[in-house]
Amino acid sequence: MIRFLVFSDLHYDHIPDGDTRVEALASRIERQRPDFVVSLGDLCRPTEQNRAILRGLRAAGAPVHVLVGNHDTEGGSLQETLGFLELERDYYSFTVEDVRFLMLNAGGSKPPCLPEGQLDWLRNEMSDASLRYVVCSHHSLANDFAQRGVANREAVRALLETRRTLLCLGGHDHGDDCRVLNGIPYFTVNASSYLWHGVRKMKDFPEETRRCYPVLADCLLLDGPLSAEVCIDGGRVTIRGMRGAWRASTPADIGLGETWNGVRISANISDFEWKA
Ligand SMILES: [Fe+2]
Ligand SMILES: [Fe+2]
Image (cartoon, rainbow, N blue to C red; front, side, top):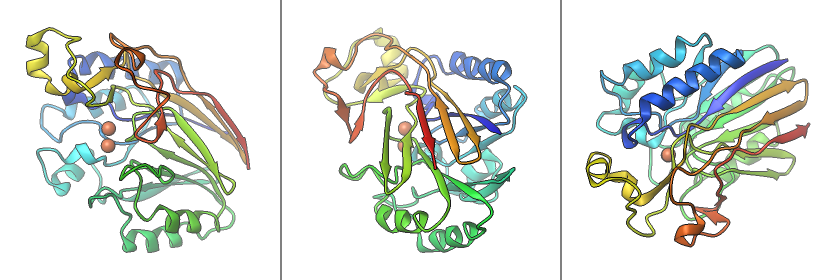
C-alpha cells in the first residue's frame, strides 16, 4: 500500500502566517509518516530566503515531490524556479511500488496548455501495462470554466483513458472538488492558503498587514493549511481529507454561492473513495 500526503497552493509570499503554516504541515508529516509528500504548486517565490520552506518540509522525514505552479516563477525565470525546487525539468515521473506518478507542467503558456512534447513524453511514460498511473498537474484537467483548466485537456484525457490511470490530482483552483470523467477521478485539492475572489476589497486584516500582503484585499483566508492523505492499494484509492475553517469572512459573507472558478468552494478537503 502507498500512502502519501498532498497539499497545494500555500502561496507563502502572499499570506502573513506562512511560517506557521509550513510548521503545521511539517508536524503533520511527522505525525502521519507518509511514504512521501506531493506539493501541487504555487508554493512560493524562488528566493534565497524561501529555501527554508522546502528544507523545513523535507526535514519532517518524507521525500517531497513538487510541481511548478504558475506563481512559482514570480520574480524568477522557469530555470531559476527549477533550480530552487531542485528539479532538472518542469515535468518528470517517479515510481513507487506499482504506481507511477506523472508530474506535469501546463503553465508555461496562457491559457495553460500541455505542450506537445510533454504529451508525447506522457504517452511514453504511461506505456507500461503492469503499472497504474497517478497524474498530478497544477492546472485542472477537468475544469471547463473560463481559462482555469488545461486548454488541451480533452486530448490529455483521451490519452489517460487509454492507460491504467487511477487518479488525477490538481490544485490551482483553490476549491474542493472531484469529478469522474469516463472512469477517471479528477480531484481538485483545496488550497493551503486562501480563496481568491476579487469580488470586493476586504478589510479583514489591519491596514498594515494588508499593505504588506496586498493579495489579502481580494481573498478569503483559510484558517490553516489544508492537506489530504491519499492511500493506494491495488486499484483502490482512498482520500482522507480534513475540515478547515475561514479565518475571518466566509464565502456567504460576500455573497459567493457554492462554486467559484468552476469548482466547489469550501474550507475543507472532502473524503473520496474510488475503485478502478
Ligand atoms: Fe494558487
Ligand atoms: Fe495557480
